Amino acid sequence: MAILNNMKVKQKIIFIGIAMLLFSACYYDKKDQVYPQAMTLTCDTTNITYSVTVTSILNANCTSCHGANANTLGAGIFLNTYATVKPYITSGRLVNSILQNGNASPMPKNMAKMDNCSINKIILWVNKGAINN
Image (cartoon, rainbow, N blue to C red):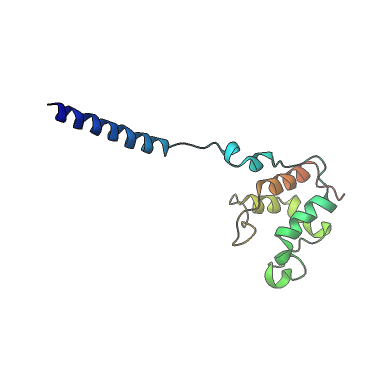
């Protein structure tokens, strides 16, 4: 009987040990603790200008197709000067394209959506009148 009780105790200890290992593997990390740098990055929207902010975003994401070679790659849509960008701002096509909301062709074409910070900067610039500054 003592041997049987001893085996049951060992089985319970093994079961508890396995259960502890399994439950400890189900720990949910918090994003800000695991990736603290991701939480410290912010989107600075304090001084949005066309000449610095918007052109930088367009150059990084759009003008490889909608720049000098827009007639061959960019369906004739030029986004490399304020004068050529303005009609797409006025019509809402630029914002709808970068939002990829189905109201215009999603851009950048066949690529991932622009980062939220860049999109927010363009929308903020548009909402403030899309000034050529």
